[in-house]
Length: 258
Image 1 (cartoon, rainbow, N blue to C red):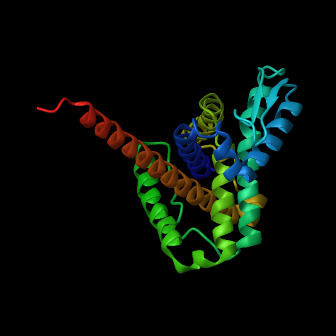
Image 2: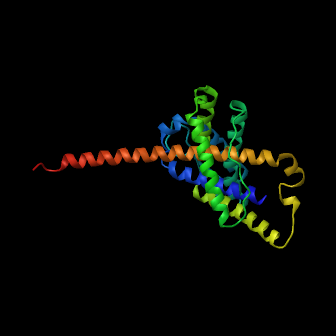
Image 3: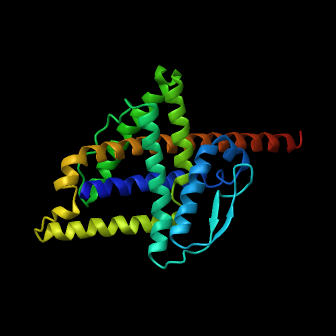
């Protein structure tokens, strides 16, 4: 369970990075129209979360309208409301990506194994090493001729659009990180005391029946998230480079000739 919580926390960090990269894009009508499937998933998930948490909706911006897909007030339920608003869209995004994978590319799997992690500095090393392997796997997927397959290309497009719009905002990530951090601290304390709480881990029925499936699913979503982050960061960097070159050209034109 410790490893599962730490890998989930690492996944939320990747998605937070994705959100920070695309934060200015998700309000643009052109971007929303291109990736409209993710917009509709975000609208449905966040609207349901607002309904369950008694949070008033301020506005819903469909793809042809500028602005974030959903804007809302503060949650009506003090603590649980913040949890629902933070967790529900993220889980909906994960679920949609896994459903798309099972429907479009059932044979697709992350070749990199999520190695066990403990709550220490070694977890960061393990995460970085595994991320490099996963990024390599995602890169192989993009360069592989299998992308000529319409179903694989559709999965890449749909997964990117869903993850971009369901990635957590910073305040949502703080709630998620606090929850996962508390879980990690509790398990570390119990482990220090020599307690083995089987009901809190993936042990007995859950670990026996679904432990491997849960880790494989988490690895697949992590691979899709890293791929989305790499594509978004590369695109953003390219745009900034082009803009900088254009500004340099304009300055050269304005310089007086000797």
